Length: 343
Length: 274
Ligand SMILES: Nc1ncnc2c1ncn2[C@@H]1O[C@H](COP(=O)(O)OP(=O)(O)OP(=O)(O)O)[C@@H](O)[C@H]1O
Ligand SMILES: [Mg+2]
Image (cartoon, rainbow over all chains, first blue to last red; front, side, top):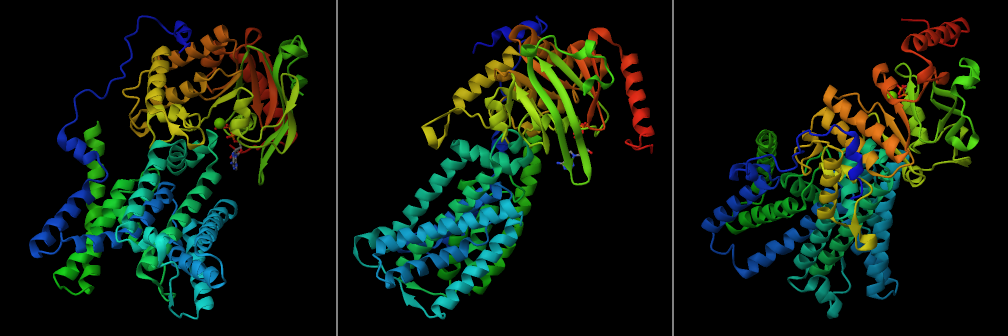
């Protein structure tokens, strides 16, 4: 840089500044403790070992596909949710967008619009729903918890009114496009990995991601530095809705039917759980996409494992509840420990 | 006008083209609170202007208007003779105005170098905005080295730094740009004697060798008399005293401030309570 002259005014002869790391190489314990994903990795390995010992079918190809299909949407919704959690916001409408999108596709298709166009128009509608979430939050200052809950119920009502709660067959389940969009047994998980990777790159490697972290970490500071905080939030809600709508369409094509009676909250809450046990804080400024995807894997293996060993699914919720509490407690303790090892 | 108290001889610029920044009647209210009630001031090219005033006098509000963070309710801003109105911080930056905010405007969860480059990230791939982290790290380390700011690790989250270190980062962020005008809102507030000296030297150097014009807010008269060419006192949202440092003293300034305060009390403009 050409700024060397700057140092002239400063007192000369002072010791050279030290820019190296904090001295000693980090201990293994220190580096493990400092990773936000540590807890979820450990508990996930735990359940993988436990169920592998209890059943012989956990690692069969068919079962891996089952797990993969189950966790695909949780992973994507969770990854998109991380953007909002990093902003210290939340999107509870994700699940209902996931359920509503295939309905839009169905209605448009039933009106004679080509399937591909129906999907494209629906995705555009999803982006608009996300924009509405963000705009109401930013302009009217309604907390995102309330805005997105309201949008969740409004969409639920819309679908019930339009469908009379009658189940329909999903279009697009034949042909090449269908194979790519859900019918192929690996297609949903590949999409999920692709989308999660894109969101990860967006958050960690782009200017936009830095602005998301800055806005969630200290909104006033971000604004004072000229970050367009309102626009950043609106974008994140649009991404969240788009991702949710897309996964909803994929899953509807995969199972070949649309059930309007399902509640979106049953879809979005596991995604939030995946994000939170993965190591994402609800307080904003910090989040991990990798942890979230592993969190989704954990939930998938847990549910699937209980099925395989023939324990009633009712147990699943009890165990899930306990695991959430334990994982969060460990995360918090690790946070304290990490702060200490960094000194 | 500023000439209310100070004679026109002491504060006024010699020629219009020497004035880089001028404001006229800047007014700002927050609900019932009138923060600024008609601020007239000017800043000469290459000059360091100090702003003093009680807590809540409106100094930070004035700075935030000059930096485009918030719009004034009324009043005009002239930059190099042209009337301007800033719609955003980025807008003001484009006109060459950089700011160190009183609250430092740092994000604790971002690292030192990320904060240094906040909203001016070095990126590639155009609209995608791919971060050139390696480049930013190097530039950050070089610049901090150049200005002798000592932080343990540019990859450390700002959360882990001391108050003085954070302050240095905030100052470094504003001075790294080749600004025409630098606004410093209490840049020395949390700093120890050694760090204060460092920042004071840096600021002096920027003014002397780079001809940067500056407005510095501080409560410490020793610092102000060392740094500034001229001082303005803001009381109750208005500039009440305008004096060259060479032509005044702490005692005289205090006297003028007290006189103005008494006048305001007489006219019922100032709160009398303790
Ligand atoms: N965003 C805001 N909303 C409401 N009131 C505000 C806002 N910003 C400033 N004020 C009010 O405006 C007045 C001037 O505040 P300002 O921060 O400009 O004072 P200051 O001179 O910088 O004080 P200090 O020396 O303590 O930093 C205060 O009464 C303050 O409470
Ligand atoms: Mg202030």
